[in-house]
Image (cartoon, rainbow, N blue to C red; front, side):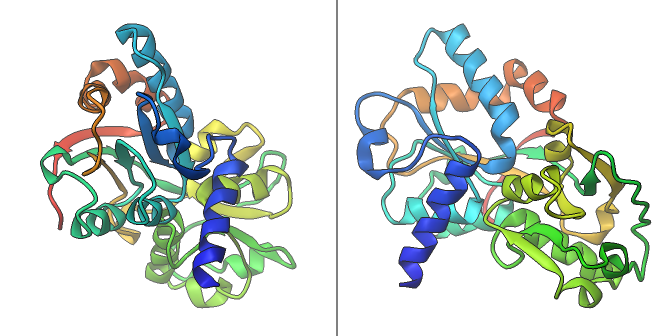
Amino acid sequence: MRSNRRHLLGFTAVLLIGSATLAGPALGQGKDLVIFAAASLKNALDEAAGNWAKDSGRPAPKISYAASNVLAKQLEQGAPADLFLSADLDWMDYAQRKNLIRPDSRVSLLANRIVLIAPADARTAVALTPGVDLAAVLGSGRLAMANVESVPAGKYGKAALEKLGGWDKVKDKLAQADNVRAALLLVSRGEAPLGIVYATDAAADPKVKVVATFPEESHPPIVYPVAITRESGNPDAQGFLSYLRGSGAKGSFEKQGFTVLNKPASSS
């Protein structure tokens, strides 16, 4: 039952942000390049993939977006994909331990920040300093976050609040979502007065504003690794990975607020 529920949450996460669904093996048929990518990459990766297709003359990749934990588990269960882009090192490490990726292709591609957001018309003021009390600011509202136990953005947010001494005050006032874009949507729609998302997500939605940025030392470094999957047989996988690492995709990532790292990396 728990496994079935996890599948449903994964599919819901993908549908929420309008990506291709993972319904069965259809995506693995033919010669389509299939990408599994963290939800927070959607705007930048959609643009980069479109530009690669235009420049290379190859068909545009089929990209499925969801939380990194959902995608890693789907790879483990045999879902077909050629590349995996995770929003943290932990889930790429998991994929590597399970022999789901090719370690020699693994790269730490991008870095990000986490921020506290509010609806664009809100007059909220918060200082993310030691002892911060978000519960007092929320009042009867809830703090929108990605799942704090499994989704990278939620794990980073929880770690930051723990470091600042503010977690215990707010942990019972959470609105947890399946992925970071779903958490963003709760604030964008006015259903939550505050949320914790990546800086890149906040930049992608004009209906929210950044209230404060979490100190970098309050959480582990936010690194996005990418790797070719172990089962990929698509010759375009290496070509697209090389494109993501090159100057062609750099502008797409930086425009959305990512920092390009492009450093070969192995499991920690």
